[in-house]
Structures are given as structure tokens and as C-alpha cells.
Image (cartoon, rainbow, N blue to C red; front, side, top):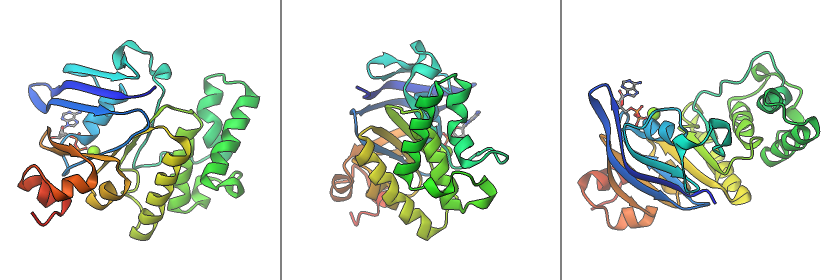
Amino acid sequence: MAAVTLTNVVKRFGTFEVVHGANIDIADGEFVVFVGPSGCGKSTLLRMIAGLEDISGGEIAIGGKLVNDVEPADRGIAMVFQSYALYPHMTVEQNLSFGLRMNGNPKADTDRRVKRAAEILCIEELMQRRPKQLSGGQRQRVAIGRAIVREPQVFLFDEPLSNLDAELRVQMRVEISRLHKELGVTMVYVTHDQTEAMTLADRIVVLKAGNVEQIGAPLDLYDDPANRFVAGFIGSPK
Ligand code: ADP
Ligand code: MG
């Protein structure tokens, strides 16, 4: 089970409060998208779920366990960022296996996981290339592959498609949806792009200046926005 629960979560940087008591329940296996304008606190929330950022108040639990009580390696989460941050001097295969090798994972199991990730992402032909010999979309696949090999229960995505051109963004959206169906794991996905949110999400969390404005299925937000901000952001005529 990897439900993710945020209860009255507050974040301050010094005296500056950027998240003001967020309550968000994400079910096991659900695809939830955090959407909102730049600076509204999306990345900060995701980083707190990942345990990369201290929580100033409230609680975050993954699979019923408080994030801060669990060692980072045992949290069962993997994060995909906007910048791919692949190792330029390593092949795709080495990029995929690096983290597992560093953790002393047995070779046979590492090979199995890398092979499976390559199959899922259709990058089997690219395994001996280096990052500079890949297109933007192929690099982003490898970055997602590095998350897959960790076999996490929760995937966290922070604007993973922002650096791609429009056509590739659409293609990768389809791939990420397929990945969600195939793996059946919980996904929390941050974007400022409402089209991405509407097409990917089981439920959308709309954020504005550190406040949760509304949580709901895409069509429910569209049909029944809680306020003008949500309506404007989702593109609802209301
Ligand atoms: P988003 O991802 O929605 O664009 P962020 O979560 O990155 O927003 O940032 C939310 C707010 O917190 C912004 O006002 C940002 O300037 C501020 N912030 C983020 N990280 C830090 C930090 N390390 N120190 C101080 N302020 C920060
Ligand atoms: Mg951000």
C-alpha cells in the first residue's frame, strides 16, 4: 500500500510561509496532478513528500508511515525532474544501473531491472549510447527509466516535460499514462500546464499561493469550479 497523506502541512523558509496547511489524500495507485502558477508551492510540496525538504508543520505519511521516520532509501519513492541530469560519460545502460550498483544491489537483479525498464520504455536499442547521442525525448525516457529501476511504490514527477517541444510533450504524456496503467503505482505529478493536468490526472489539486483551492477529477473541476481562480486556471467557461 502506498497511499500518500498530507495533513495540515505547513512549510516556512525562515519566516516566509509558502505552504499554509495543505490537506491532500492520495489513494494507492492514483494519478494525482498538482497544478498552479509558478511559485505557488508545487515543487516544495513534492520535495516534502520525497523527504528532501523539512516539514515546518503537520504530517506527511506514505503507506501509513511518517516520511521523516523512514530512511530515504526505504521510502519506496523515486523522483523524475525537469532537467534529466544523466551522467554524460556513461552509456544509457550504465546510467540506468548506476544507483543500484552503488547500493550494492546483486548484479543479476540489477540486470533484470534494467532490462525490464528498457522494455517498458522501448529504449532497448539505445543501451550502449551516451546521453549526447540521444534526442530530448530519449533522454527523458532514460531519466524515467532511472526511476523505474528502483521499483518504487510512488513516482514523483516535477514538470518532467517542460524542456520538450510541444509534439514530444504530447507523445510523452501518452507514455506516462501508459506507464501508470502498466505499473499500477501511485503517481504525483507537478505541472503548471493545465492541459497536461486535465489529460493525465485521476484527480487534480489546484494550488494558489500555497493554498489548496480545490481537489477533484478533471471534469468535476471543469463543470463545477470552486471559484474564479480554479475556473480560470482550468479553462472552464464558468
Ligand atoms: P512552484 O514549484 O509552484 O513554482 P516552489 O515550490 O518552487 O513553487 O516555490 C514556492 C515558494 O517558495 C516561492 O515563493 C519560492 O520563491 C519559495 N522558495 C522555494 N524554495 C525556497 C528556498 N529554498 N528558500 C526560500 N524560498 C524558497
Ligand atoms: Mg516548481
